[in-house]
Image (cartoon, rainbow, N blue to C red; front, side, top):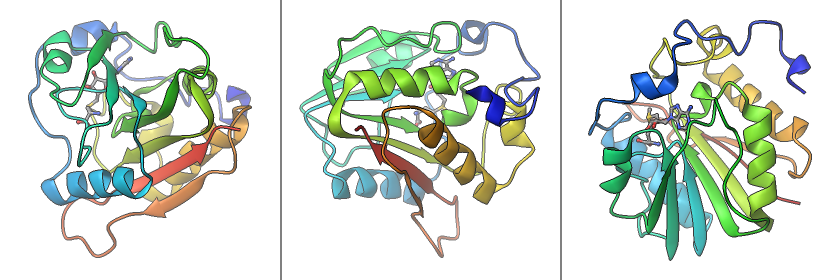
Amino acid sequence: MSSVFPSGFFDRSDEVDDAEFYRFDRFVTHIDDQAIAAVGKLYAELELGGRVIDLCSSWISHFESAPEHLVALGMNENELAANEAASEFVVRDLNRDPTLPFGDSSFNGATCCVSVDYLNRPFEVFAEVARVVKPGGLFVCTFSNRCFPTKAISGWLATNDEQHCAIVATYFRETPGFDEPVVQHRNHGASGDPLYAVWASVL
Ligand SMILES: C[S@@+](CC[C@H](N)C(=O)[O-])C[C@H]1O[C@@H](n2cnc3c(N)ncnc32)[C@H](O)[C@@H]1O
């Protein structure tokens, strides 16, 4: 369904294997503390718990209190292994293989924080999320206004915050299996990093 976006939308200026870019450990935070707190507050408000999968994860997943069983999936093994909220981790390049190595309806929810802009096959990833998350479970995508520009899709780099929300809402709307997405700016008035969230429940 990527035809809803123009040709070249999912291209990136650095098309070298993502494994190369993420080979080096980055024990950093990608958004400031108040934006991180806004992510945790949203997860708590939405009552994300039970078995949760955090896509494009690293050493932090931002939950106020960790879900019962959190699977952290990302690119850098050392960062994932250091994620104290995670019960297990999976190293997987979703741009090479957008499948999720889990059974149908095996999670209560899914998250993807400040990373949806790196996915160049988002419809396949979103379809997999709709498969592995139980009906009624949520997929919550959060993002700010920063990124690794060489690894973000060109369509993201060419658009503004409001349009980023519309892009992610389109991913949900064009992927069978999701209800209508909710789009919110979660930290109006914050002087630091803005925090936007788009989420939808699995049908
Ligand atoms: C900006 S960091 C965000 C990390 C974490 N979600 C957070 O909130 O701090 C981007 C993350 O996306 C992951 N990532 C990037 N490309 C990926 C890919 N092709 N497949 C899976 N994960 C990817 C990286 O491992 C990295 O941890």
